[in-house]
Length: 455
Image (tube, rainbow, N blue to C red; front, side):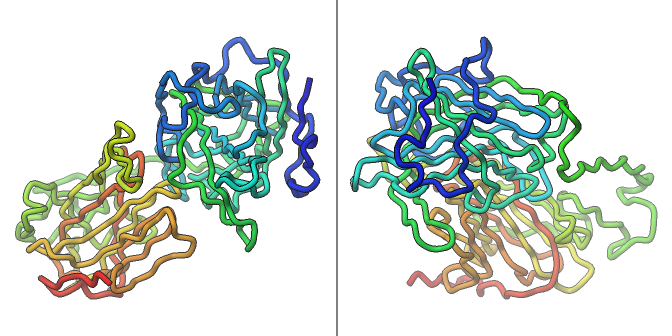
């Protein structure tokens, strides 16, 4: 028996792009779903951030039937891909619920995502008037965060179907075109899938993007990583952008620590990878913060088109939520420190840093002088940003968005540098990168010892 969304006034709630139909719908749970999750662990306190963390927090409380994930699996034909989510009871309900299925962690030309490049997303409104629950229009999307980029707001639309299966459990099926991503080609694998449901708050339904407030809300249920899914062929590969694999280039011989060839300043070609300070630069002087931190060098070869990756490892933090004593979680911001030294052929160069992360987290970046005073910063409240927050008195030489923090062209003398401080206030953390390069000087650093504006 199918229980379609149309039975609850879909005409008033669903725009024409949100199609409800039988396409790609599944009526039986496969013997071996890609994800299997325990029944009865949807408690509203699994995690207090939106994204699946690749783990399953099981507690005896079960506060939501329509948000209790039981199984997740995929299916495809020549043109489309579907993610199927079985839940304890079919939605909708009194409170709104958002469903996420994520897969294929990795890199891409737009961004890197440690949780999953592919994100199937559905948000459904609740029927309870008032009470803070989401009551906007449904939204179904498929976003390739690594190759296409963007956010769920502007991602391509997907179709969705809601069913009631023979055992009275619910099934939500999200279906989208395989042409949306090169990760959906014939023979490709959707790796390490995870899933989550969360409870979105009430949102506005006016303006060009419809402002759903979905950050910092309780996760209802989450899952451990599941098994990989291989996309079967069926009429040809989708017409996604090609994936170009470059042949490795033969490295020139190395002599006395320098590659042969026409050298730049100090007699060596400057590679575009991070490395320790060169013999031509004195050891970078740091303050107490950077005393034990690794020092990496950024050279002229690091450009906006070919930046270097500075490794950052951060533990998870829920510090922004101020729930200490309510949940057993880390409520202090976690931190990574790294020294950056500029080695340029010019007397000075503009230092650029870009730190990207999943939308609606909250990370901060600071650059510190040798006395630990602030040289530059980028520390907007990412969870509340709708438009870029540019260089201001509080964000000196910085630019904040909902999913990034950046330092823009900070004038730095040759062999000079700073201690980079990266703080995690709300996010899953993990192995991350700050991209760095040299370019035009746009902003001067704050004077050494100056107290930042706090107004």
